[in-house]
Length: 141
Image (cartoon, rainbow, N blue to C red; front, side, top):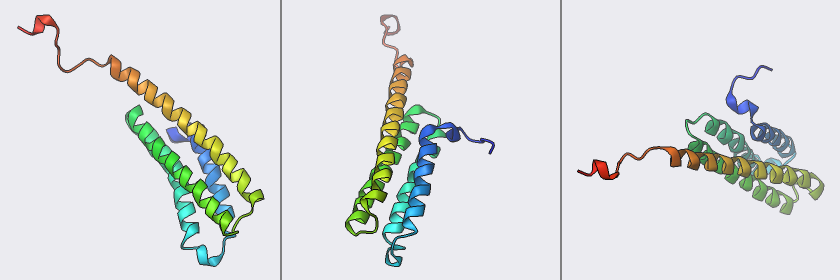
């Protein structure tokens, strides 16, 4: 398939997309009573991960992109927490949960690393930007 958007090249977005597919497959097996509860919450949080990465990549600044990565990270933590609830309620077993949590751990580390690199890059850019108030002695006359 031809790539059309910047986010498609991002490894974190690709991995978030894979996690979405895993979550959709697993939640299809949840009890019918959870179709409007935990299933919706898990799927919503999972979709927010890849959506925030994509939206952030389309922003005009690294600082804005970093903000959306923080949102994606938060949604990823929400997914992990909700899967522990699914384990507690015996909707999933540990054999099903372990690969999901490992993928989430790896993805969270990659999101955090990308976020840090964007913030470092953004801070270097802001240090180079000229001040709007010029306080050199020759201008204080």
